[in-house]
Image (cartoon, rainbow, N blue to C red; front, side, top):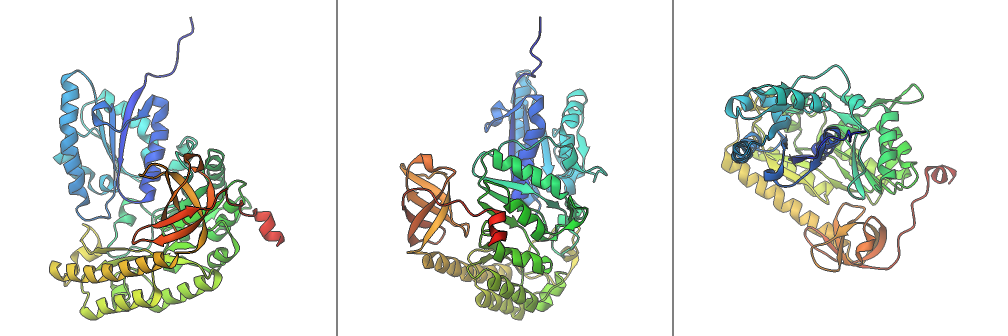
Length: 466
């Protein structure tokens, strides 16, 4: 008699910290493990395998991981007492940077894997099931992991993320990315376009291209030439059914003329860009090894606004980098006032082991860092709220992401990435609809639905013909 060859269902819990690239990586790990019979769960008690996909950017990142591991240890021991097995894995940047520390402090962890090796997860699971002791995979393999991954699963909503570039060669003084993600690597354009088409076919209306330094993209094109991000964006925008396009995270040094021009040429490319500057002080930018000056950042912003007048900007700022003076801090506040930001992320400096800034001096006292961060954040909050208020009365197209918290209310995203809430039927999920903004709040917009759906954006061919 023929037997059912499909493996028995097992449960997989993935907890994700950090950037959208980690979100993408978690989804791909689920794809890799699906053929082994793993289906998702949100409950540790149900899980046959738990993966903590970690990020090393935030302060005390590793301690948060160990805290979560301590709680999961109890669940694992309870399952073992019932004769059940839980495989516990730590993935991502903390795993890459602190693999030996993890196995020393948490010997009950079965697998430690870096972000470049998750295509090997099935093999790691098999090894962990056979032998005692942790399986550690934190090298930078010679093969391209994307060549060994299964096709992308259908997106879970109208917004999808697609990694096109990994790693970084910039070596900013405060950053661990070059050490945990490795050197810059760009996926071939044909591979990216094939995945983008699958995502659109699966229901994605908006795609965000991801990279640690995404605008340094230099992938091999099908024409045998090296493509930059501007060329790649144009080709992705031509995919029928794709309505919106974004990319993140960028470096000011890699905003070339072709990429800036794409902002003026592609209606699918949303008028919102996250462009980290970190400081407004040339002295600090040099200490950070950013490779640009404040004036360079201003010039890039001017070119972007000339190409796309309605573009809004987001950025990153660090308060209290080693050696930062009151004058350096004042220069950062001045840059924020001069540029104006719709959103921004700001953090006080915290040392990352192995980075140049960790051993640099003089270190800024914590109380001073706190005070400077509070000033930066107050100014950025005022700018964000002013930008949101300025949208009141405007008619715009909103991508509906699903029901909001209140009954009968829908949630969506504006072209400028603002959360938007309005009354409307649940059937609008996944559609782009016209709304009128009735109020701008500090972190979101209130709107009224104008009925119907928005017109699809023109195709790439129509844009060229025009």
